[in-house]
Length: 389
Image 1: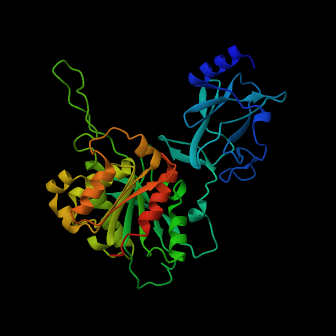
Image 2: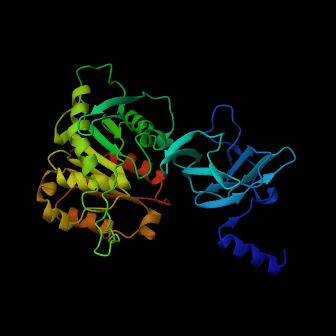
């Protein structure tokens, strides 16, 4: 390749235009993804972590694979079948989609997952530590779908409830409860589907590393309050998070969800045996709700969702006195490239609370960013600490 052509390709890639890799540059040991639809060969993943997709679209003019915010051109054969692959991807779960003549569509070959406020395609890049959420020959709990009526919202809602192994066999035993929240643009299916929360718990319980507890996974999406308008009629700049942004879900959680779960399941219905945790937006909801209700939750986990400061404790002194565990976690790449926020350095904040006498833990997921593999690892660590004091 000439020097001029190399420069041209580099400039195109810097502009977000990518090309399917030629077969000579790719390790040809592709295997079907573990989250393909039954009987589908594509998408595939190789040992480098590249994703190869294939779709039949004879009349299309241009087809691309869109993964990790990069688009890769696919190549069309004489039968109208388009094939191509991505650059190597990080370990863990990735959302992706296909672009067919400018229209974003799910891959018809993959299973679908709810993320980015839509049902779309997802793929697993095998992780070196995936054993902690692997399906194994151990006693398994159940993830139950529960439809219920919300009095505070005057509408039907849905949550998923994980009950640990042995729940039905011992009708006298009662269990602690973790209320576990998803991130923005996801829903109540996220933790059991993308997050493998049930499998993580099954394996931990089988290994004797965690106590048995119930997990409730509900939909935390809520309309944000509109910012007030200034005198000129335009919207004022919004600080994040805006005042009262978590009130809607907090009201539903306290008035509908918790009483319903305590009524339908054999729970230990007190603060000492109740925890709340969440990822990203769910972690931010956990922060607001737990600070305001230390008499409801004694164990708190925030995964990539801010942190709690000494100033927060001064405003909510009961939190320090009543909360038995505060767990804060991030992916290492989030720490290296922090997002702007009002909470400051999460590690410094968490260590300051420890020095002030709280039982705090700060965990960093190695080599990951704002993604499901960070949060799977976070749940794995958090679950080994809760309800053990």
